[in-house]
Image 1: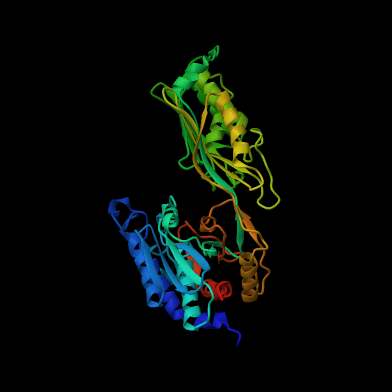
Image 2 (image 1 turned 45 degrees about the horizontal axis):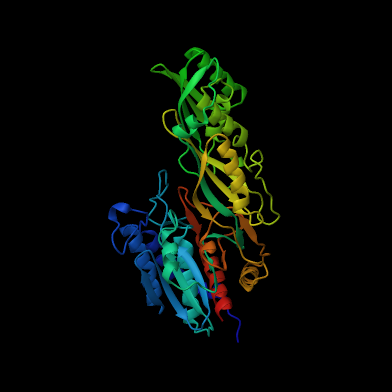
Length: 478
């Protein structure tokens, strides 16, 4: 058989690929509960985008199935085994500050600029066109190929969770929603809450502090567990120290530690503001946690007993503890890297609950039960109860599995570059499959514009990714 030039085949279809991708990106497919209804559980925009993708697949000759609007699939080929390609049609809100309208999908300097261009509507269309190439060339396949379209990836993953309640699990597959060359392993991902009620604290019957300098009325920092908080606020009621003394101490602390913040006297209280640097919770050491920096200052004051216990716990176990060292849960793995700990939200109300909301990512070589038991034990010391909000177990495909080796070979043949494999602390649809990896579309060295203003994909990269996906689909299903 003549060798197929996949890049040449893609370029024959480049004009249609670009135009269809632009039309897809012009649909505002953001979660919209206000327009949610039966068949469109996440709103009309997402439903419209799902219908668009399905129509492109249907026109190519694929068989379509809609799973109540939560997800849908498009299938072609024949055989017992099933190759899955998972992508999502929803996007995050556009935000402000774009240089072109976020849903215009304009071409600027060789890039398609739009929300969803790289995450994940651009690569979704690249994969669909890749399949169209395989189909149009009439290549014989011994397996079925199924596109599975999610609609809720950017929020709660109800889409794929609902889909797999009733639909077939692919034999193997990939998601075009991350990085090239290939992501074969993802850490376990957990959202946890340590909560101490006022009643639980009082049951400790802890002895009150002597000569209390201030009472902590409230503290608030952070909005999401998977982000390092960049703002924090605490309200103090002066006791042995007057307001001006507290203000002076805080200003000295900020200056001595090269921190940004402010302080004001307000209605008989002192309000402290701390500024940090927000980064993704998978690598919290790259940021500055405003919440734990503020509790670190508070730990130097003599506070009321409950507040003293709260800031003592934060200062001992969470301040600059990005890997759980002081908690005794630190664990490093040669493949996946270290366990990471992010204190994403801190909440304290003197007359209500005292809370830490944590995001912990851990490698496959340590068990969830092992480290969570240690965390629960330390929390109990201060009457905190541990609640597991969400838990995704680690995901790993053996590097010698045909899925991995085939995709590595395809990538090398198409790019001429070595196809190393990557382990990450994030989560992709790859973990929704029993045997699944993430495969592109972001090429090494390219800046990642996902979730940012002026999100974009280079047209050259869109074309190159399509050629890679076309060969990958054929090699996996032939």
